[in-house]
Picture 1 (spheres, rainbow, N blue to C red):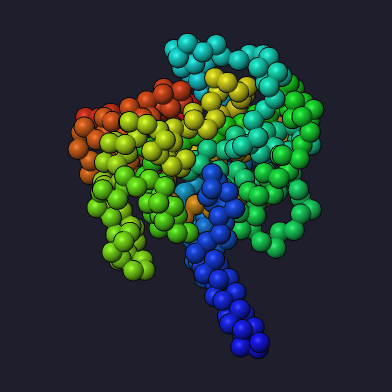
Picture 2 (picture 1 turned 90 degrees about the horizontal axis):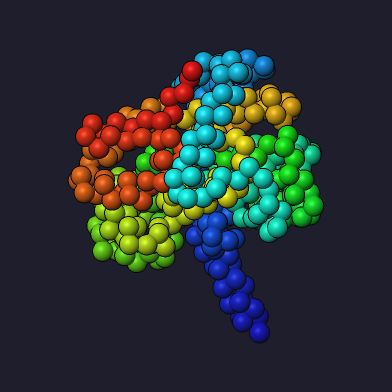
Amino acid sequence: MNRYKGLVFTCVIAALIFVYFDGIYIDEHIADFKTKPIVLQALYYSSQLQLQLFGNNMTGKVTDAMNNDVTVTKPLPPAVVEKRFGRRLEQAENACMKRGISYLKNWEIMTKYGPPVRYFVASHSHRAMMCLVLKAGSSTWNNFFWRIRAPDESRNSSFWAKTTSSNSEAFRALSREKKMEILQDENATRLMNVRHPLARMISGWGDKFTKQYYYKVLFKRYPGMLKYPNKHKTWKGWPEDGRFMEFADYARYMADYGTRSLRNLDEHFLPMLKRCDPCYFPFNYITKLETFATDAAWIVDNKLNVTIDTITSQNVFRKTEDPAAMIKEYFSQLEPNVIERILQIYKVDMETFGYTFNTTTLTAGGWGEET
């Protein structure tokens, strides 16, 4: 009997170790809800950057783990930032009209059906709600809403899954009446965060084919990827170059399969409108990752009236100091017909949020809104 007890105990321990080191997926649709080995957590957080927001001047500074200044964002007058938000909404409204969708100035649809649950976070006390787009600063905004929504909640762990699960549970727990209060209040803050679609694609590739074993999810869920060169089955451990699939090979997969059906794309690569569509939801502010410092500063100072010194950014694959240079570097590896098909996937995103890309010069833009 003792021998069998020992065998059962050994099997249980072995199973726990396997689950622990292979990642635990809490929700298959939100695959970032998972735990990681403590060693990977340490590596993950050692690469974090912090965005400091200083007082009313709101000068944004990105600081790396060695406390070296990476980027300093010049503060803008609040009136300039406010006009910038207005232009973004106008851009989205025009794109909705082009799609034949009446831009929602009233809340009739949302009043009838209620707000969606997935992808949203909220702080009822601040009359604030946000739809989070993956690979566009969603981790940072999740952390931010966690801090203002539950200032007394334990901060012993800043692990991203903790903030995400806490925010999701809190949003689901809000009554319909409280959600509708945020939707119907003209003075409430309803946010959406966006990023240049091509930069999102690059970031998703750079992150998800290494991080947290997510590449296993991708190759299992989308078997078409196995037709392209990859090191998924042949490499034991981590690839020498850090990724299980080269960018050009994944781009060809997207061009071939994504244009057939968006169901062939993981949610980290889907168009932003598939997650948060301003034609169907009454957002009144659209923030861009490229102008995060000034956007967040204005929201914090003028809308939410909160005191917060640091917003911690939790993205590992980070080359956003010069998004135009990053996009040009990676898209120069692609054939013109691949680029054209990828742009087809993100065409409506680009039009809705004012992003641009020149296929001749490979020059990206749409975030330079300083004036």
